[in-house]
Length: 580
Image 1: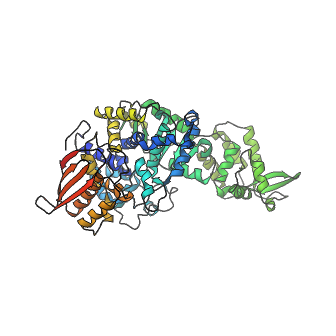
Image 2 (image 1 turned 180 degrees about the horizontal axis):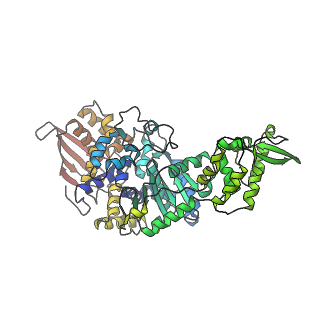
Image 3 (image 1 turned 60 degrees about the vertical axis):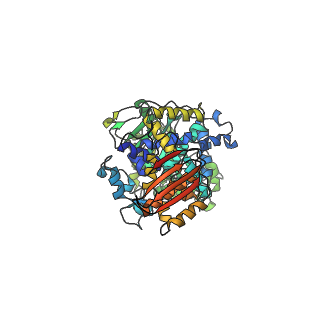
């Protein structure tokens, strides 16, 4: 196989470039540049550029960042579901992966940072152990999932998979999809979009105005962050309770593992400032009410004094918040009056409830003492809540402080050495063709991120095939599982009967498990799937490949073994001759 300007220089690059083809979560943790390589692969994809033609996005380029993000969010919600099952991309073992990555990371440190290799998560995050949560308890403790981050083509192709009515993807896939869509459809510059990953989750922070957070198929504004709903609580969990291991940006990355940081230091400082501002709010009564709404353990401690039909009455807080559960109105804002009209009349008492705090007094105090540093409210709350018979009341002020301000556990910046890489000059005014041409040029100059983006995009015209083949034979266990017990002839028959169409346009190739999962493939893709299965049966196998409009591969069980011929038709426009 002939080398070219983008070929791997050594074994390390071969491992890195092959990881861009398989894109597993563990590979992204070890090689964090892959996270943004996937974004660029999606930006090069014609798939998202087709979204511009959808009436849903008409005139979006003239709208605010919040409008654009909300519009993209709704489109993603309508077309993709969250998927993190074990069957889609199969299983591997800790032993196998630790052996593979031993030259890159310390196994002990890896176990402290990655859920697949021993990290247990915060006890609040899951009330059961990690393996049970992910459905791994039925396997040996050494078994871990081969979760793979999907390109937009693979995400969209889930509609061909049994049990799915539309596209699907896991959290990193959705994060990368958001960034590419906001750039392509929303015409938003990449400079203000930051990808943030914890050991258990991935999301994006958009540093526009008060900030926006994309969380799987959801969007969280700063106001939503503090609204006390169950949805917002789920969005907050990873930042509240997990260490941020990776911050990824068009300028580079900051990783908790590695001493060198390639992200532009000015952009990282900007991100820190905006993100911390997003995670901080002054104490107002609205936010205090939202905090209480999120903490049912305190509801019985409070009552609200209300004037109804000209008469004073009292309502226990559980009646108010239980009504709020199914209402569009909220106790803490201007819709309170409408909410109170929805409450069952049996909740109103003519006499105050003994032992319950009158929340009106707290509201009056906060309205007359707004904008103070949070610590200055301590004396009032400690005095006002003292003697209340409610359990755990001594924790309220502390929990309120954590609700209003989170200190993100970012990678330790002082320990890092900044080694900024040459910036990639990509802007929303460029066409897809211009961006593709630009990234190919930068890849030929061996720009690290541009190089990875071509491998993640599966550009078989401008990259070396060896990394793709390495991934194809080493990290595609699902097709092997599906063909257990089948003969070579039976496998050939199955592949010949699959639709001869690829999930990727042009000279780009699907990995074997993508062909198997989505039940379709071009002739060259079917040939690589067959080679994967043939090698499993005959580890000493050799092959001779002729790739063109017709694909012919001669397989032998060994140098002097039995021969088989695989033939197929390809529309990829690729031409190659090589031996494996």
